[in-house]
Length: 432
Image 1 (cartoon, rainbow, N blue to C red):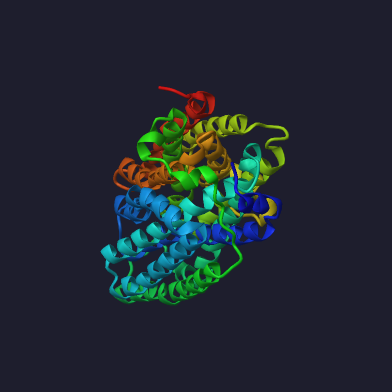
Image 2: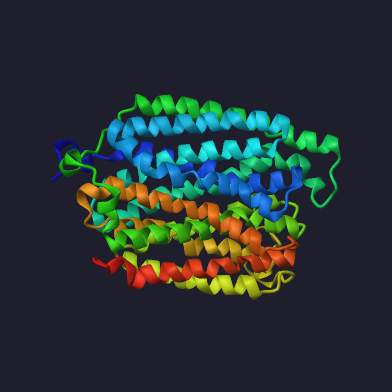
């Protein structure tokens, strides 16, 4: 049973949707900066593929120990205050990048990434169930898809901004042995942009705290939030958490390692490669809004996404990294951009990944009632896949040359196979 405030929000939700949309954009901007930051730091700090993968690991591993506490915080302080706290934490993280850049200490960069991940986890725990509850359950994937367009749209913008403000000044250094002066200049280039990011996040956190964002409170959740043990008694939720784990692993590999792989191939504009992946993800979200549930059910869309991911993974691993036939054919109308086919196929994984998150959430939360907030915390824990996936890719990449890194994408196959299982069987299980 919903309270009057919940019914009122359902009837007039434009302002809450607009505010939450801005949060999804911020989430995307801060998250997908990693796709440019990872190869940039790989070059500045002379990192191996495995060491570079720790930049992503430290960001995404935060969910493993903050997701459940985040759900508790949201229940105690409410969605609005929780969102403001989360953005404030991200502001602190932005400030930490400044001493990291000045000292060039890899460990301090990793700590800054960890703090940013903690803020992101708290914000994810709040905004995802908030969007799911803003309307009927059967159209939840559409609402999340709309938010996803903002999130992944930010993923297109962030690498372009990063390149314009930071990387473009050093594009001539790709593939060269850097001098101490060049390393210092590249590191110092991070200071002003991250100071600006921190200032913006601080102002936005204050704005969220005092904005007209109503709380969504369900009567049954007022009585109890439910224990983790109760939530784990639902197979569809447990399998949903595992699916989110594998999905985020695949998403982060596709979005954040493409730049490092492009760097190994000698591509000068490696720092914008994430924009290609995000562009295909935005395309996928738009298709989801158009087709779900009018033409495709959430389950059917999820199934198709998994199958496409499996096929693309095989083509990436066993394809010719020197061939540019696909890029010559499909990118010529967009200014004659020439990319190796494997890079283009990695970018197209964004299309396969787009619908997975918005489809899994409503399927996994279906019928959980008062357990929703606890279940949401568990689902957010699945984001830890973003920590493990790139590390496995780094390990599978071996010595780190282009050929080895290409083979590293073999780790995508089990990810998409499990997503396919959840789409066909897992989400229907109501008992063990």
